[in-house]
Amino acid sequence: MCPPAHFKVTYSINPWMDPAKPVDVPLAVAQWEDLVGRYRALGHTVEVLDPRPGLPDMVFAANGATVVDGRVLGARFAHREREAEAAAHLEWFRAHGYAEVHEPVHVNEGEGDFAVTASYVLAGRGFRASPLSHGEAQERFGRPVIGLDLIDPRFYHLDTALAVLDDAGDAEGTVMYYPAAFSPGSRAVLRRMFPDALIASEADAVAFGLNAVSDGRNVVLPQGAVGLFGPLRERGFVPVGMDLGELLKGGGSVKCCTLELRP
Ligand code: ARG
Image (cartoon, rainbow, N blue to C red; front, side, top):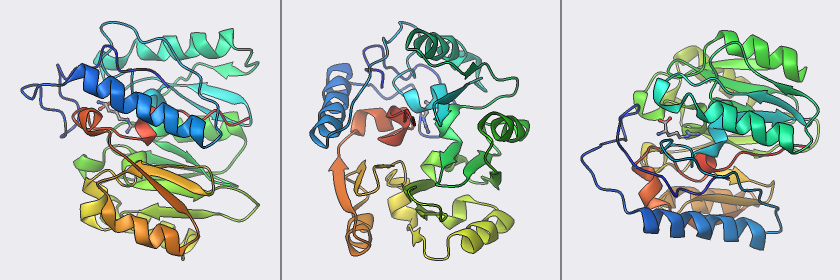
């Protein structure tokens, strides 16, 4: 995770970003620290990446790489404004003893568009990741990559439209998603793979409720996604609501701030 010390909205690369709206940096930092504190209270380790001036979106650390089985596939950003973030992540992984660190050939924004289930990697395309990055991820991770077409610009990354709730065991696991964010064919793929998925409403999706991080039991998600709390509990999960209102101005929330280091 990377603190929002230099967070700002000075450009607009997704429909949520409005440079005319002021950002309260101390509040953003406090909300981010609450999230870090919550993860630690749940028993998770949090590593912190140093923020760099001039990279206001660096707080959205999930976009910097994807780690599966300890193998790292770096990012290549779609927009020039974020390009330099990729090197900061690669350096961090190299300095922290990751033996397999690959610089990508094709555009991918890390876990923004890659979601890892027990057996597969789900991969978004349409707004950011190049479809060619899907083959690259499959080659690097040795897991089947399932391409999913995103069609609604509000849900420009896969992690704004779908969250993996349970990636343990050898079955597909459980996900929650907002169907209208996907093309009809991709919706059919999701129905086939996850017939018991939790289906989110538009209101919960717009509240960034799918931008969630699950450890298989606790599901940390934006508190505004009120419609997801009951259905998550019914399925045996413990929803943990967070207020990341300032970071929503950049078009991100819980998951965007959290890059998972899968050993
Ligand atoms: N402002 C950032 C962008 O548009 C937000 C990224 C959010 N991250 C995410 N994982 N969806 O690139």
